[in-house]
Structure formats: structure tokens, C-alpha cells
Amino acid sequence: MDSSAADTQTAGNLAEPDRVRTLLAEARAAGVASLDAQLLLGALTGRDRAHLIAFDEHEVAAPTAALYRANLRRRAAGEPLGYITGVREFWSLPLSIAPGVLVPRPETELLVERCLALFDAAPRRIADLGTGSLAIAAALARERPAWTVIATDRSDRALEIAALNRQRLRLSSIQLRQGSWCEALGEETFDAILSNPPYVAPEDPALAALGFEPQEALVAADEGFADLFAIAAAARRHLREGGMLLLEHGATQAGRLAAELVRLGYARVVCHRDPAGRDRVTEAQR
Ligand SMILES: C[S@@+](CC[C@H](N)C(=O)[O-])C[C@H]1O[C@@H](n2cnc3c(N)ncnc32)[C@H](O)[C@@H]1O
Image (tube, rainbow, N blue to C red; front, top):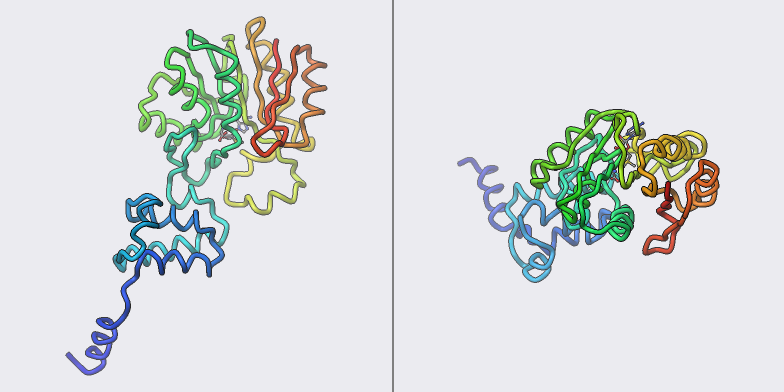
């Protein structure tokens, strides 16, 4: 061994090993939230957050620490956690997620809650339009095994990820269809049609922080109303008499959406708020 190699070897032996607590502390310096850091490290070590916190003196192998630091940099650059770990929890279901599909948001669980509140467990026919990762359809199928759930999307990539989640979560009864909104429904009618469509206005400054996600999953013309209105107009023909339309929308869109639903002939138009008190889901009856 030459002298420079010996020096390196000595320095290596003396260097403090990476420990859970030092790695988590690096997140703070990088401007990454501690919860995100715990989830990133947990995904690489197979440990849950409670374990990392309780045993924060544990050593982490150098290759794992290097990967964690690379992932911290991705998160610090604004990449969604779900794209880095490949998983996002929705309705307590671990959904596989990848670039090209929207990362499901916790507020979308309100759409699931409302649908479950409106219908009992008897067999029903339900459509989830613009299913993305399958989040809404998967939650409904898991809660109501007797329901027929049809999940649609226009995007090839979304349907690939939806099919993967259907297989991994063993929800083979969900039917996947490709097509633009109600075109994927043929001549069929449903007890309920749900959708979390794109509803962000093209000029919304909030889009700047959403650059990693597919814009066609987020942005709609006409101040964000184009897809909401298109679904509302087309869904009437696919709802049985008394069937329900449930739409997620932006916090400031409830009034104009309700007016359009009434104009189209829907009854019992009601808006529900998310846990943060924002108008979020509007339901209407055919
Ligand atoms: C806001 S994302 C919702 C994804 C998922 N339902 C969720 O809640 O996480 C909207 C979804 O609608 C799909 N989409 C956009 N335009 C569509 C259209 N014309 N017909 C069908 N799906 C469409 C997008 O590909 C995307 O998956």
C-alpha cells in the first residue's frame, strides 16, 4: 500500500459512520421537512418513522447514505416525494406512483368519503373518470367489494400505473377503460360518477410549484372549468334517474360550478369542505 492510500485508509477508519440522526439533521440544512426526510430514509432502510426516531443512533451503510443524500437533493429541488420513493399512500392503500401520473392528494379522500356516505354496500355501478394512479377507484373497490367500479383515463401512462396498482392491490374487479371523459362509458349508466379532473387555471401561479407533475392532469381551460363543465354536461346521459355526480374542484370554484350544474338540470347541488375548511367536492343528483 503506498503512503497516500494508507492516509486514505486511516482517515476512512477514523471517519464517523453515518447515523440515522446525522442524516436526518442534514435534511434540515437542505430545507427538506423532517417528515419527508424520515420517509425518504425509511424507504431506503425498510424502517418506519417510529423506528428511525427511537433508534436514531443506528449506523446507516455508506451506499444507503449516499442514495439518501441524492434523494434529499431531488426533494429539495421540489420533486414530489411519491416520485422519489415510488409510493404514495391514499386511503391507507400503498399506491405505486411514477412520473407521468398525478400524485394523489389527501383532500381527494373527501370524494371517496362522500360516495361511501351516499350509498350502502349493496351492488352499485360506479365510474371514476380520470383515475390517474387508480386512487379513487381503488379506495371504493376496497371498501365496497360488491360494487362494479369502472376507472377511465385518457393517458396511456396513467392507465399503465393504474393497471399496476390494480394488480398489486389485488383489485382485479376494477375495469380499466381508455377514453376522454364519458366517451369511455359507451351507452352504460351508473349510480354514481366521480371525478377529480384537471381544474387549475392555465394562468394560476401555483402551477410553478407543480412542474414535475403532468400538466394535462392539472390544467384546464376557461379558468379551470373546462373539464368540470364537460363532465357535468356529458354525465347526465350516463347517470340513472336519481344517480349522483361527485366532482372535486378548486376552493374558489364552487359557486360557478353549482350554477352550471343547476343550469344543466341537476338537483340537490351541495358543496362539501375539506378538513382545512375549503370548498372541495360538489355533488349533484340527476
Ligand atoms: C387531477 S388528475 C386526478 C387523478 C386521480 N383521479 C387522483 O385523484 O389522484 C386528472 C386525471 O384526469 C386525466 N384526464 C385529463 N383529461 C382527460 C380526459 N379528457 N379524459 C379522461 N381523462 C383525462 C389525467 O390523465 C389525470 O389522470
